[in-house]
Image 1 (cartoon, one colour):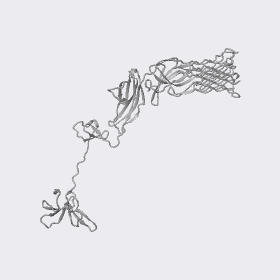
Image 2: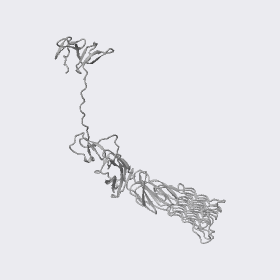
Image 3: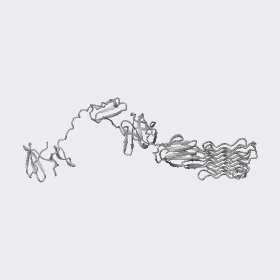
Image 4: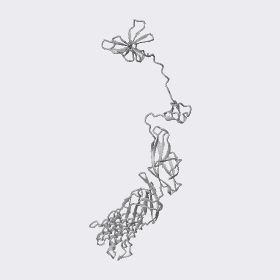
Length: 551
């Protein structure tokens, strides 16, 4: 046991503890002891080693309660233990611990547990520890949440009839084989929603095997967006997926089709005939409007091809009102007279205009006719795109409307009719050994309906002789030119394409009529992004003729 020496001792002061008497050396600051009964060696008792010791001096460390001897081994001097301790015998090994095994987590006891108790689930080969409230799965390394195999779309549009279900689908797997459960919540700004507190845009949400069924409100005052978070959980971690859900009230009218691109849902409303578009809330749209194509001309050496209808595309914002949608008809081809001479009526007619939202696409110019009594009848007609000129006197093609198309091609003396203009200028008839009618200009491509489609091609010019070649119709529906044994082709319906010009009518003796322009030009279509907020920002559009898409 430790010796309790007097505090603040004076030099020479003695103190006896047991059989040992100690004398205080003030110079050294040490209590020196001598065993009672005489004949013993001097021992220093202190909590620090004596200074300037001699070989054989002894020191009792009053803190560690161990005896040391100052010893010179011939090369150095040091304090060494007077009686080194011997290691005790090794005790018996404790019994190895082993957690209780259970078939699965559900089989673990829910009561009678002590904090720190462990169990092992044989189905997932995982260890669990009781934390005083629940069994917690113990990580054997970095924990990995479920991996999503079917990711919900980034945006989702609700139906606004108050009853129709729309779905958001999520599927996931756990790399360690843990069963997956699905859940959801939602938020808008700092407000968090769940099954007990739905966003205003929803009337109900149910979930089954990762399929979330949502029913939107039919109240226009609830229009808007929120964030829907679908979650896949393995019992410890969950992996979320974010979808922006929108309730909007979109225009009505036309024929509706839908498609998705880049995680955005689009709605296209197409008008195949004149009608109305009723807008219940301000919305942005994309549009594409195409007028009726021009009819092809008739001549004994090649009538001009009809020009394509005017082509307008862009974006606009629609306000709350009913919009009139007008679909222009295609122009008529020049009729086939019963007999020569042909003095009039051998040119086609211009296509009708199409209009929507205050925008007007001009009908395609007519193809020129050779036997028309006036110069203007031989020339191609002006329009959205110009019609091709007739063969006689190298008649000029018609002029296009700025921003809507291109000019028609020139007819060739003793060659053929010029091609109708479109997205490209109509080709001139070829002279020399080729003696061919001019090709119609190609139309333009638009993806407004979800796929790239070329529309509004120019009509091809008719040919002059059996050795000539008729003009090809422009890509997008332009009719080809006529030739000796066959009449020209009409422009393709609902594309706003021009009709082909007739060929030489000396064989057969009764000439073929010119080709008709594309029937009704192009149907009006309106494209909108279904993810757009009511009155929101996304753009939209219309295809040829007139058109629009929710945006």
